[in-house]
Structures are given as C-alpha cells and as structure tokens.
Length: 67
Image 1 (cartoon, rainbow, N blue to C red):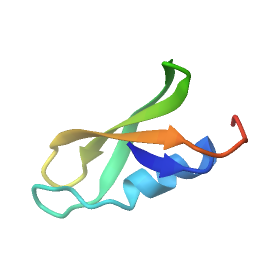
Image 2 (cartoon, rainbow, N blue to C red):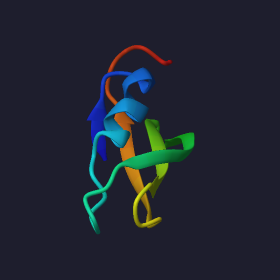
Image 3 (tube, rainbow, N blue to C red):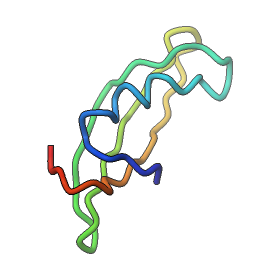
Image 4 (tube, rainbow, N blue to C red):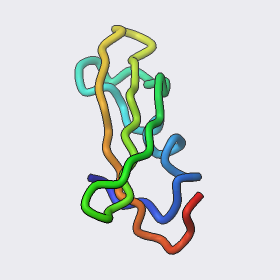
C-alpha cells in the first residue's frame, strides 16, 4: 500500500494518479476503511473518465491522526 499521513489526503492522491491504460483522469467510486492485523488500510476504487476502466489503489495510514 501507498503510505498516507491521514485519510484526508487519500482521495486527492488517488485522483492525481493517471489511468494505467490510457493516462486519463480517475474519479473515486468508493473509499473503504478497514483494519487488517492492526494496520489501518484504505481502499479507493477508481473509474477512468476517458476509457471507463476500473482499478483500486490501497493506502496505509501511517500518521497518528485517525481521520
């Protein structure tokens, strides 16, 4: 997973990553929080505005802030 200091920066980071298929812009479809073995994880499900392809990016919250 990509390290993030807080959940507040995840969507901005995820939408700043280009589509791996066409380099188009991505929109967040879903942002899910979960804890696995005590590690705070976030999954962002994204859809490309241009080609419609779907992908997920995973983030790990590494800051002390829980938002």
